[in-house]
Length: 176
Image (cartoon, rainbow, N blue to C red; front, side):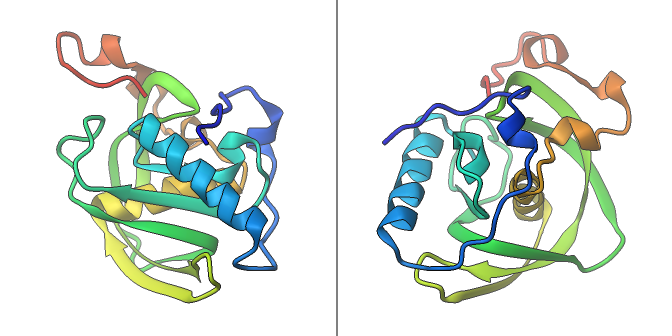
C-alpha cells in the first residue's frame, strides 16, 4: 500500500530507529511491501522506514532506470535491515542529492566514495557487499534516515542547496 512520506520538519524523521529483532514476520513483510509500493509510486531510488513513520532500521533501495536520476548507474534492488556501514577509504565525493521527504529541493552532499555494508534481508539472511559511486551514495543517504539525519544536515555549503527548478532552470529535472 502506498503510504504518505513524512516531510522535513516532522519530528519522527529526527529520531534514531530501533533494530529489528525478528525476521520474516507479518509486520516486516507488510512494512517492506508498503515501502516498495511507496518508493515505486514516487520514482524513488530508496526509502527508509522512518520516512513513512515507522521507527525501525529498515531501508530499501534500487535503481534500474529512474527519471529522477537519469545518469545513475544501476543499483540492485535491496531490502537492508539493521545496516552497518564501513567506509573503505577516506575518499569523499560531492554530488547532488534529493529526498522524498524534502520534495522539490536538491543539495551538494559529501559522501564516502567506496564503502562496505552489512545487514540482513527479510528472512534474516546476511547481506555483505562492497559498493562505490551512486550505489554507495544511496546506501549512505538511506542509512542516515535511520540515525535521524536528513541530507541538508550534511551539506557543507548552503549556497549549493535550493529548489530544483531554480538550480536547474529549463532542465527537465523530476520533482522529488
